[in-house]
Image 1: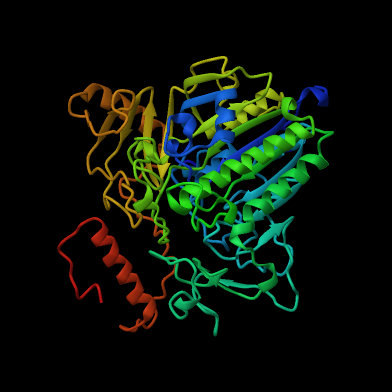
Image 2: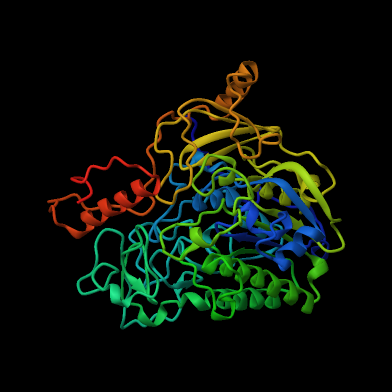
Length: 549
């Protein structure tokens, strides 16, 4: 098996040419959370309108073949930050809120590269790459974290907004923490006397569908258990405004020097609880309204850059971490209210899926006055942002990265980039080469609890995604020579990492206690209840009622 080589970003390995600071543009990477290819009106959707995001697409390079490396959050963010395929790191999978930092402190990273080339670096919003070394004490400065991998400033949520701890962490410290009310977090057991969605359903203002039935914060049940930190807990409806203010402050504070800002939007990830002024802005309920809120966030940033005279001095990259999902754990009406809206834009699959809808995401590159508007068919991937930005600022990159320099494609000067890319979904891998996607066989369920197809075909799949965007025409039997060629290239690329049998990652049921199982234990009963609901959702008519207690 191949080993990960951590590349130490010392000046002996990484350097920059003597370029004047004023010649370097500011760089902002905006990464939405679970935003699908069809959720942005720039790609033709008529059911939802995103004018501010569209302005980036229409004013810059709008990619029709832009990819995240992975169909879930943590691994795709890992690839963006490190320029490495996430499937080379066994820890790059969906993380709980108390997971340790999965990027080695000595590893080469995008923010470290920007730092060493004279940039002030900041990370604001969703993180989901782990913090600390495990067994985090949230009442002290948490490290290692964003600072240790290259960010001068950070204000983050540790994981996702549906997971504890439900607090903001600024430069490693919990914001607004009362020392007399310390925080305790567990993903294994509840704390005595703390209400959950099971014990106190009357406290809920949002109902859970599957898995999200632990601690209640702001009337919303979460994944995991939390005690204390009452004054520090966020209010979901205010999160967008909170981070927008932090973004504006960072821009203003560093407007006289080049800055690099990573802005992780939390929308439209669950729980979808947009500010009241966005409620009802769409006919699609909280998910649609959350997308409108995300668009507002982008608009506020653009307006502030213009106010500070920085719009022409700032390169903006907008994308999403993975494909869309409707029912991801809460009863917010997303599947029922979708109507004619296609979150994946007609692509098959979505979040968690090896089909194209899992990783084929919105991707725009905008630099007013420097990049001419163009729609690009170039095959590009987020893993290449590191090397491409490195080329722009004349950074010296170490060997061994998976990131490649396609700056001309990102700037719209070339219509070609990658010839191929390995895509990943919870340990399962596919291979895109040109217009073809090859999917090796995997065992497992057709769908998970969300209802999204996983891409477990049971046999080799070969799809021409230019002629067959929906991936319903498997031509593996008709194209044996092409299939063999793609298989050969794929297995050469993933040598030592590919496994034909992949244990499916549980979405919500992390660490269910198995000691001294009681047949009437509510946790276990609840697990089987959710299994029952899932079986029903996929129209399975044969159900063992003894299992569904």
